[in-house]
Image (cartoon, rainbow, N blue to C red):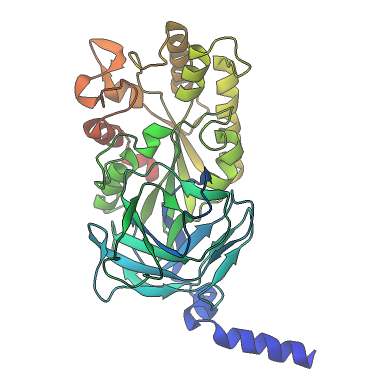
Length: 402
């Protein structure tokens, strides 16, 4: 017993003071300020051979400290990362001078994440303003990786460069990366009443087609509205959208029911969730009739009800978003339109959601409700333009969060 106590004391002395006392702080709590829903991403074995990956993220809520969440949830072997740093972004792939701080895990700079797992860092003493842009850099040594965990569509330029360049303001010979690799979330230590609004959905929530590096996804616009409201400045808004996601079948990433616990219920501080899902189930099924993936409106309503029940069991408020118009999209059909209208009618009238956010009505062309208003159409008749994403955010009644 004496040897065990000595060993325990030796370990505790290596941990940062902030970590030892974090649980004693009663004036605040940890909440998610930025997230990205992970998926499996096939990798070439030399993709990250002795590389520094620099992920750029746009936070919502600020705080007095941060924790970084790394993920290997879809990896098939342990993931070793030999160093992580967090810094303020200066834009254009550069970090602000003097802002870089070391991120540790259990007091160590190297972390090994088991296959299927994630790791939350030790707290980092870091004053972070609201709507901050951060750079999270990680040095990945040579290792065999057949499957990486990533978020593939980001509307954000990220970078990789050879060698350990964790603290370099501008990495030498950096190459652009599309996905966010191995980064699942950024938490902040904020006020005791801080909480998180989770936006859950497919590519429309993910911000497909929004302006690169501009943070013009609808959750970003919603976060800006929330932060500007004096009564809601304690709320974060995070984006758990995955392009191509479906309610009942896998496509890009796991189906919505399979990932709901991980991407909604397990989000630190989650209090509200906005669900915008089903259009890919409809489009995929009606564009490929007779497939075993065929679904009906009732099938999709049952799937949505599952999310409602699971959210309510955990004490979350869950808001149903109506499906936006899609006439003219590649996988549009009249039979699919009939299903979309059935689902929207159920969302509006069933009373099962805690509230309804009518994205359909907000973005449709009054002259042709099956289509977007041209100003809100990206051009593919499925995804909104930047103006369309702003209109969606403006359609959310902020009193829902009071």
